[in-house]
View 1 (cartoon, one colour):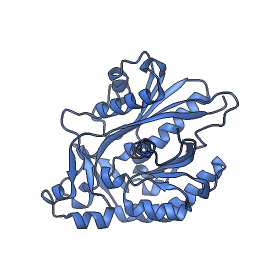
View 2: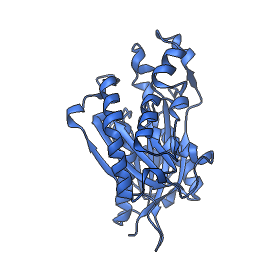
View 3: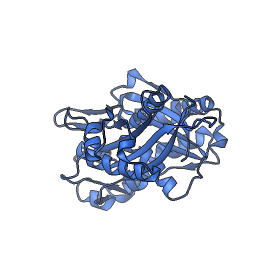
Length: 315
């Protein structure tokens, strides 16, 4: 197999928007405090009748439509999420049922904020190996469901949403559209980002994650570019996990992507964990802010402390 590409993208967010001013009525905070520390202005919040798999299915359906495909064309569904409530059926199976798919393999991937880039790599490898022909890869999370609404340092971060990509093989003689993955973890920092307990609640050691991201992440991201055979200067877009604008901007500068559009969807969507990268990329493409075929660096990092990145060609 010559390789794979992303054929199309899609994204979906709940209609309800929670502003910084709204949050100021819930906890001791303000728009100025939140903006200065994390850069977030708004976040979307799912209602009790909007489960994670519904958001995922909406995003998946949009990606299929954009690719000109029908559900029966998909034989692998991968859903990256860390906010599913039930053990079985998993999110991928529920998405397949919602979309009336035929008989796809259905797998969930829980690598928290690095989930989508891990799932994208798995889809790339699976299609390359001939074990699937087309994959629907979705990142979907409802982080507001696991937020501690008494902790102003974390609840202001959380948002809900989903993003999806259709992955398929490239034609004979075509260059791959998904580059080699570079993935790993930092075991000694595995508890720096947590979703634990009953009911599950999000917590993090914010300063240690910040220091790791701005110090250790840029050289790893440059190695991702090396594996793909591109220089940071050649990148058309940089889509990092949308954790915090105060991480995204300095990391993008240190990578050296001087000509790239830097995704800043965190401002309007908050931290949506596994949904953040595909959702931000889908929006850049939908707005025409990055050219088709341009190389884009995708890099997820967060829980476990895990990371995964690859350079893709924009559909």
